[in-house]
Amino acid sequence: MGSPLARPRPKKKSAARRQRKQTHPQVMDAVTMASTLQLQEQRREINFSLLALTMKLGLVSLCVVTLVKLSIAYQERLDRHGELVAVLNLESAQLNTLQQRFDRLFTLGGGIRLMDEHDQWIAPNRLRVIWR
Image (cartoon, rainbow, N blue to C red; front, side):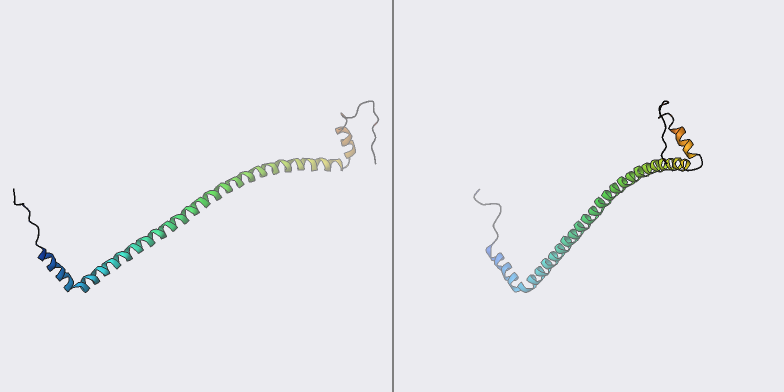
């Protein structure tokens, strides 16, 4: 049990590797630098694409929220408009009946019609006074 199964590598090989690396340091550094620059550029492009996508999604969500709010406000306006139209129609009908009644009072025999309309308001033993 005195001899181990795995033997450590000799130190001379690592020195040989160092010499190989030192013989072409400019080539390896240029390749490594180019690949790191390319990776950095790709990361920047991805980051900018994600930023643009986030901005577009934000604008789309803002537009959707604005359209929802506008549709709600428009629906409320339509409801109010319907209510106003109904009230206007009632008031117009009432105005027309009052105008017809007023016109009947100022035609021939209008005074008689006025007295007939207000006959129930005047007590029978009272004197009627009509101002001219």
